[in-house]
Image (cartoon, rainbow, N blue to C red; front, top):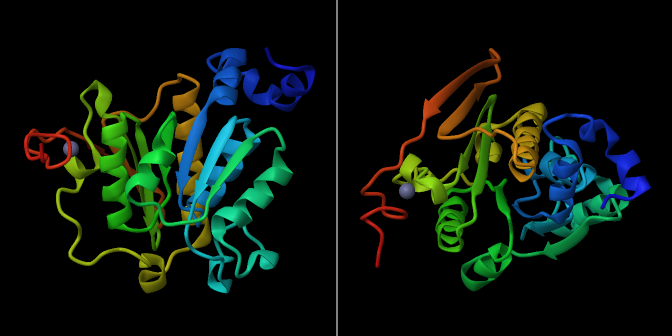
Length: 252
Ligand SMILES: [Zn+2]
């Protein structure tokens, strides 16, 4: 049951017929793990907290640097030198005191990663490296939790929801091999405009809210955005039977 205050606070989204009170209640019950509180994770976390997601687990092992402030809008000058998950939690607590926040101030691996995913309804990949994405993919497959993933660099971005429970593709079906050059710090090397990660991070929040509320989401497709021309493309996502993570190539 929503309180008077919740009905008022979330009234603009409750007005949507396919979201309604049931959608709001679903958000309130939901637990989302956000991996990366940088350029993508900032708007994603802000919108999920503002929209009334009940439990947010915030994971990031990095600290806020001056060059982050151009696009990582959940942080501010007072956050410099502070762990990004902690800094984000401070801002989100001020934004919505009813969202339960769990700070994971580390680069999640192995058992810590599995523990962070356990019990989550959705994992939001707002990370910046192939190594992290592959680790998330394997851990999400094992836990049976869908993985919503975005990436952005320069003026380009992409977004996909990997939900293998209904026969969908996994992240490694899309990228069987890591790119020769790991894209960690891709933004440092190639550059990125702030609003580009803002748009992709907002799309992460949008698809997360739609998924949690039981609305239609991006399915079996990768959305590719060329934000220089504002063109968008969609690639069909197909499960690869020989995939080394979800298919016959997987280790027993
Ligand atoms: Zn796969």
